[in-house]
Amino acid sequence: MTTEGQKTIKAEDAEAIRKEEVVDIYAALLDKIWQRAIIILGLVTIRAIFQRAIRSTARDYPLVGDLSVSGGGLNIGDLRARVGEREKEVIRQGFEGLILNLFDLLAELTGQVIVSKLFAQELTVVSDRKKEVSYER
Image (tube, rainbow, N blue to C red; front, side):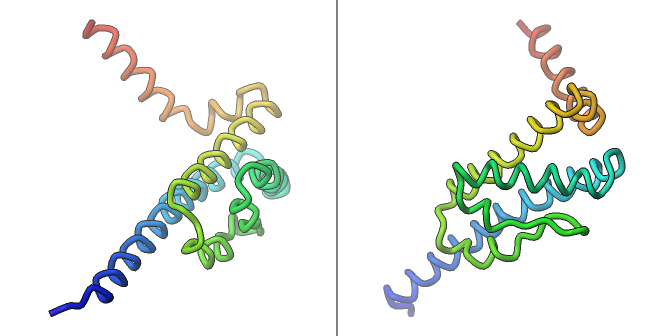
């Protein structure tokens, strides 16, 4: 038989796990962006872009300031250590803001060329889905 206190601890543990899952999902996505972009732009350029996006996003979402960039990619250790202090929605919004800032920077620097190359497959899927929706009407 469990006590009310034990149930509360388990609920808190479950929430912490869900927050960590959100961090893991966005970290994996950002890693894929890093891996694709580094091939096209090189290490120095992609590091500078990620660092600028982090600084810019951290103005609105301070938790993003816990991220750092190294030669191997994005380091999420400091953010992960403090994930329990954050609301899940704030974590999600911070990562989404970072990704949008990355896209904006890439598009601004290259006139959409790099963004198109990085996400050609994803853009095709979205475009095909829009066509399917318009035919259904």
